[in-house]
Length: 240
Length: 319
Ligand SMILES: Cc1ncc(C[n+]2csc(CCOP(=O)(O)OP(=O)(O)O)c2C)c(N)n1
Ligand code: SF4
Image (cartoon, rainbow over all chains, first blue to last red; front, side, top):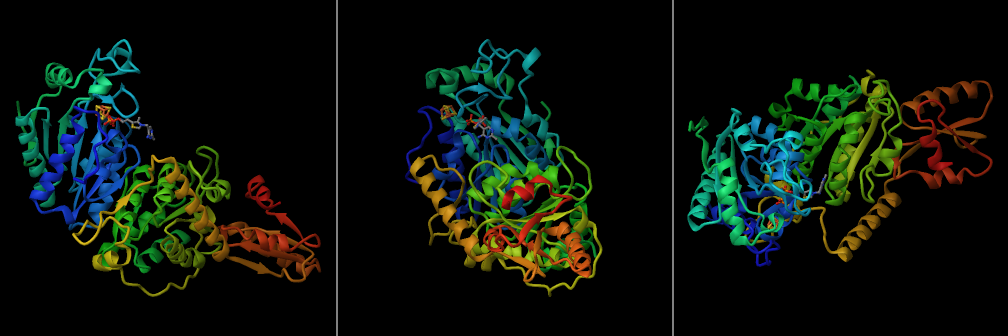
């Protein structure tokens, strides 16, 4: 990480997710061989904090950038870091097609069920009945659609090698998430296909909660809908 | 060889590293030529059919950010989809080549040749205040030669370059003399040439390289815009290209580019046979535009805009 002070709200999961990603790259001695792609969202400034070469993509298009970088520089580690609006709404096509082509990249997906950066609007992953500034009376699935389990969706694609869902709000969770991110980088670097790590995270500001309360709310509401654990390992779906 | 094929072959020969595109008539031969020719076996060039024009232009952004020589092509509706990406490329000052084989519009329009994307091309096209280097071939030979020219300018100034062809030149078969194959740069050469700005991996001996068009500090963004304008001024001073046919003694001069210029050249010839002193001024770069040159013709010579294809667009620009 750089010395720059994080711009995230105190208690937000983005900072921890950044840190473990960089620790993994350090552990793998991959700093000099890694190119990261930042999204549009709260983590648009990821390039200010991650001490590696980075590109800042247009909203939703990070997997397209990563595709070209990896194909033009097969000797590099390439990853995207994206929020749920970026990855599962405006960038759905780029996400699905990069996954389907089996690009040898890592996607780190921060699912906080809301648009943090723009002030708490409804995201594709917003839970049923969950309030946001554009669903002030709660998400009505009859008219606003259902929360999109994009991670389960892309796990179906043959080009995708490793899919896991993690959280970073407890020390145990951080350890597991870091291990998963390491596995993802190692396997994508061995050209096994796309490796996808979802991190279910809080957005205490967007959810209008204290950080601690937001983590309890996340455990009680987000985890039942987005259960943690591996979804696809070594190209095989895990049956539950 | 068709104009579209000539551009693809020229890209391979000038050592391009990657092409990313999506099919649309009348430019699909570009992607088809690459896929048949398999340049990955000839030079190591990467070719990928993207899922959309939006994905393709963002692949260009990713590739150009690493200092590699990348290009994409499309036709009018697809070029509209690329505008957000072009704005980002201009903002982040990335070198690349984009080909527009123009067809009729607005909307889905038709698949006939047209010059109706003129304004979109020379005024930037997407959001924000920026320019593209715009060069318009009027033959298959120029289609090939201008791919190389466009890459040269793109890397010289770190600016996206647009080749404005159209359905006629793209589909037309003509004899073409192709330049010799040039070597692609190795990864090491790319790092040596562009490592001061390109994202090629942060080594211990340098600061990290960041490619972004974002700057949340208003003063800095203003400075960035001033610097872009200064660069555009330099291009206007140094890179204008045009051709004059029988302009010296002409009473009237037609101004036309691309396909229209070919038609007008014939008109000039017929007029001269009848003793009418007609000349043709063909802008080759549409941005920067040879405004000064046209102004020099003064009152005695009156520019006549191309009547058929461009309609109001071209006319307004210099009249
Ligand atoms: C083309 C375009 N449309 C809309 C926006 C505005 N915008 C910026 S961030 C964002 C949503 C980000 O939400 P998410 O991806 O969930 O990330 P978070 O901020 O929650 O981390 C939107 C809609 C934009 N920058 N560009
Ligand atoms: S708005 Fe939400 S996602 Fe953004 S930094 Fe604050 S808590 Fe994190």
